[in-house]
Amino acid sequence: MRTRLCDLLAIDHPILNAPMGMVAGAGLAAAVSAGGGLGLIGGAFRDPDGVRAELRAAKDLTDRPVGIGFISHLDETADLAAAALAEGVRVIAHSFADPTPFVAPAHDAGALVLCQVRTVAEAERAAAAGVDVIVAQGTEAGGHTGRVSTLPLVPAVIDAVAPLPVVAAGGIGDARGIAAALVLGAEGVWLGTRFEATPEALVSRDFRQRIVAAGTDDTVLTETFDLAIRMPWPDGIAIRALRNRFTDEWHGREDAVRAWPPERADEYRSGDYLFSRDYGATPAGESVGVVRGVEPAADLVRRLAAETTAILRERAGLLLG
Ligand SMILES: Cc1cc2nc3c(=O)[nH]c(=O)nc-3n(C[C@H](O)[C@H](O)[C@H](O)COP(=O)(O)O)c2cc1C
Image (cartoon, rainbow, N blue to C red):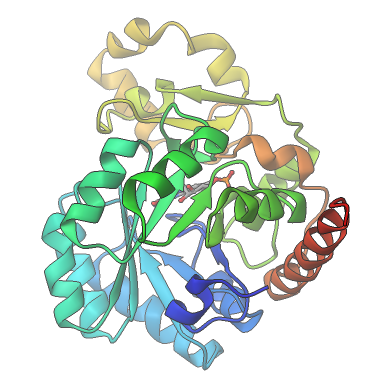
């Protein structure tokens, strides 16, 4: 199973972990790269020193290249990206913003730019900006995402940006999903939720167990968490997370959260809520339904690649003559 993405990124399998802020550190990224995919460090919510430290830690863990990705509408992204490029990173991913300002500095430093998009219009903007790979992210995705589903989005984006390689993201949690994405024409896949259930993910044991226990209909796409912490996101973007007491109480009552007095928002923001079971966000996509256990990331990449190959072979056998 080799695609153009394997050649472009010099990897064995066209499988990337999503650069999940606060969840994908050097350990996860290095393990994914060691397994033959491309590991991406979640660069968001760090400072330049943190970015440098994480990239150095990854280098100590694997000889294979590791990339980094950002939440690019955040003000500090230009500084973080500059720190990563100065550290010698060769793959840099941007999401949730117009990538134009980030492309030239990356290319000047010899790095490839991946850009995650949620609509065809965003894909066209990224292609016009000169990015090297488009990541089409469907609404099934865990974490922040848009409103269009992966199945229609991926082929529409491929048509819009051809011949640029397109990677599929959102709702892909096993080899069947990877095979489907490749049949849609994607050159690779980028998985977040599946990699939350690895020992390398920077989450608690309880968080991993929630991911393994959840079913496909246990998630909700909601603005409530971001409203509660007063963290604005670009229009059309909300977070998909596991439903819990907080979303049961506030989802659909967004105006009530907007109207929280500042002290209440401060209290919520400063509490130990962030990844807590009942009142915090457990970012997860609909693919949680096929995540059945915790597995080391390198083994997971190898197993997914082998199973995808087997599925594609077997399905080709459906053809008569
Ligand atoms: C915990 C978590 C954190 C995430 N953080 C980021 C991030 O910092 N930057 C980003 O571009 N995408 C982020 N995402 C979204 C992923 O890039 C990706 O689109 C998504 O996980 C793919 O869908 P899946 O979860 O169904 O595999 C995050 C997703 C999760 C689950």
